Length: 244
Image 1 (tube, rainbow, N blue to C red):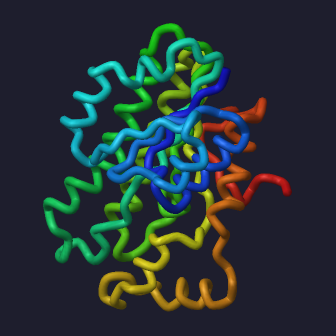
Image 2 (cartoon, rainbow, N blue to C red):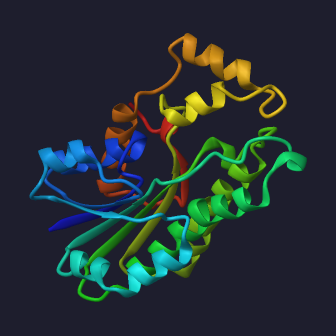
């Protein structure tokens, strides 16, 4: 029996990943600030949802301690954790970044995935565990205006590398960059000023040229990889490097 926890399942890539898993008969527990009503109606028997602000680390810790995660996972032959929820903000040069926005981004982009990964690793009565961090090319290449986003995604990459060195029995992990996707994040990028993001016009041109990948297409490839025999062989990867 395969079960999956997916963060940020209410929209974008997270919604597409959750839908792809549900279509394959995998029961999903979705964690996001808002429920995904459309998926809830279509998959009422196999989608559980919990509304939570993953940027609130205290609330997340309390939820983990409350046992809902353990109850959902109990008896799973394979348990998947997909850490998709994240934020691009704050965007702009360092002098313009708001301290509270930085703290919120680090909590959402880094603390929540690490907390959930640790909780999944510690669960009893579970077989194999697979953890997928949704990373970004920004983890490996610096972008002006994206210092917080670059740093937090790089943290996920290095977390996966270090966990793999831990060599935890029955746990595989990978931090995977899905490519440039046609999501709300890209709309946010295109709405930035040039002071905030000097490369804005390049991303506008990419969208106009049809260079963005549909979330459903990226989700299908990510889930294929997540379920593949070689998942986690490398702690970091880029979806665009996979054959096909």
